[in-house]
Image: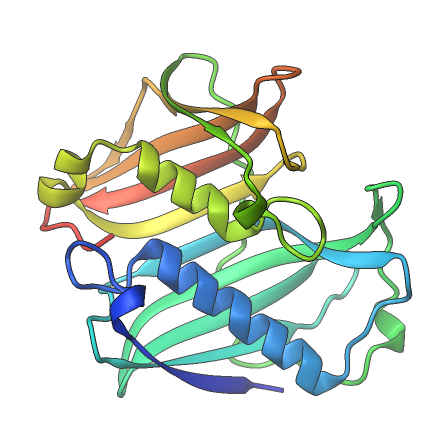
Length: 249
């Protein structure tokens, strides 16, 4: 079952370049997934919730102010995978600007541990044809890093599951990058993230950048990670992939 929704890019959704950038697109991705689940009547037992585990976004361009953006989404057939994969396509008119794949699973809201999802009780909603080729991969923890910024988890970061909303991690990365780079740096064409450990209200995270950067032709992969101050545990890893063009993140 493919579900679609249209969004208009309004003034509060654009960045300093007048574009619906990374943070906005990830929020739209989250919203359409939520809407689709509600429409399908997919409900979890009391005491369970959904949690993102990985995500990969690939963009060729970014919507601009007043654009009407159409998102399409579907769930892949789970097979023997303990995680569900959801695909998304992003259009302005007939032009596809991007694709995204997220993996997520079920967790116990009391123990905060992942539990095996019983996909068999779901209605027949799986999409078996025309699925995307992306499978978000593992991003290894970097050992040689430099500190960029420090953030404390605030009330506005918390979602219905009482932990940091998945989109906030991308916001932290963007907020840690010097503004001159966002104004004059590279064009963002990809974002990947692994969610490794929950962040909760009051937690402090050190946003770090790996000193080593990877190149593939003109493409540059820059790795970031967030280390929780209280125990030194890496809560997430993320990679931005850029091209040497005007920035639209």
